[in-house]
Amino acid sequence: MGTETEYGIIAPALPSANPTLLSSQVVNAYAATLREGLGNLAGTRWDYTDETPLTDARGFRMDRASAHPSQLTDEPAELSAEQIALERGEPTEAAILMNLVLNNGARLYVDHAHPEYSSPEVTNPLDAVLWDRAGDHVAVTAMQRIGAMPGFSPVILYKNNTDNKSVSYGSHENYLVPRSVPFSKLAEALIPFFVSRQVICGAGRVGLGPLNQESGFQISQRADFFENEIGLETTVRRPIINTRDEPHAVAEKYRRLHVIIGDANLNEVSNYLKVGTTALVLSLIEQGLGPVPVLEDPVGALHAISHDPSLQVTVRLTDGRSVSGLDLQEMYCGAVLAALPADADEQTRDVVDRWQSLLTTLRRDPLDAARQVDWVAKLKVLEAYRARDGLAWTDPRLALIDLQYADLRPEKGIYQRLARRNDVDLLVPPAEVARAAVHPPRDTRAYFRGRCIAEFPAEVVGASWDSLIFELAGERRLQRVQTREPLRGTAGLTEELFEVAADAEDFLARLLSGPDRRMAP
Image (cartoon, rainbow, N blue to C red):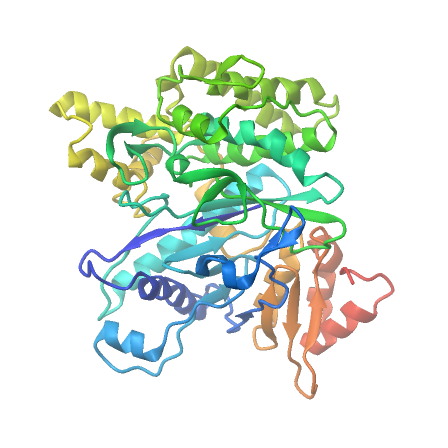
């Protein structure tokens, strides 16, 4: 599994600044930090060769001419020298980086108008939280560097999902699923789960509607921006189930479930349960054990549940029953518990225990879950201001507090203050987060990617999720190493090679000619 975060970005002193240019400053500022000693920088380009964003899991491929430009993620973002000169008010011939492959196996890049961090692949929910938090660490590092650079206006990065002026940006999850599981089975079992999952991991938002046209508070940042049940788009006509079939792995064996409906979480327990419960429900579906309550109106139910922080609203199933978001979550949690094997590992049991406990707490009184859930913590802060100053939900100060909750600046962000005051539950120590920003997970192919970037910065000239491209001195042809098996390229399989190889040429020779091939063909 893995996560993707698009950060909101502004430069307060430059309200009309080009956000793409600001985002490129984030990438280049972090690159400058790497050059100073936190790791190597190869200038590795992102390899788009195997990207297929228009392939649909329902068995067809969208015509390129019919696609929204935002769907063409296999084309690199570019800024012209003219754009840069115009924004900076000065000529420049400096190369502008729009992509970085990091030593921890992650990707930091400009995704349209946002800096985006895509985490390395991990095998469990706690590691997903750790390397997602590592992305926040990278973002803060870049933000602080820009603020210290003469001639640059400070930028602020937010881990949220909307500017409350009609624009929404994503926080995506990816899960590797066997190709043998029919996509239709995944979709039908996951729609009610995703519609209700927001009650345990929504980020909370002031305002209702995509244009913020009604006052109030709702559970999810993203819910109002979804219009369809199933579809290929991610930025327009957003669907509850995204059908992009781009496995970044052996296509005959795996599909990648690309989840676009989640909120960006700061609370570590929210994030842990978001990915942990989803992985468990996917396991149920693979076993043919997932509950399949069928909603009469999934998109309407998504909005209705989000608009009710009391968690009392009910939505209709096609069998005539009316159920709440908590009812739906309890169905899935109960099914997971019933199917839990006796030898389930400790982390799996921890996810289930926390899920059960949180649903009980939310059923008793939602405000009791402020330590574990972003939307509850945010609502509690907002209600305190409303009570103290008599503020109506239309008061713009509440919208500012909403935004301030997601501010990544350690000294300014409300979530950061709650964490310092021990008002939220933490799962990963700051020292581990800092280490994860520069070291890859050891149990996936991200280890191979990250170590190659760190050890052979001059020779690795291209990278993607499922390949690395080497350029060796004296070789006329580039050497591509495929990494299509996500559970190969681990420390267990390749660490020794990194330790004994004299240089990149020696490393590749040992890797590709050894008796036991360590990488997928």
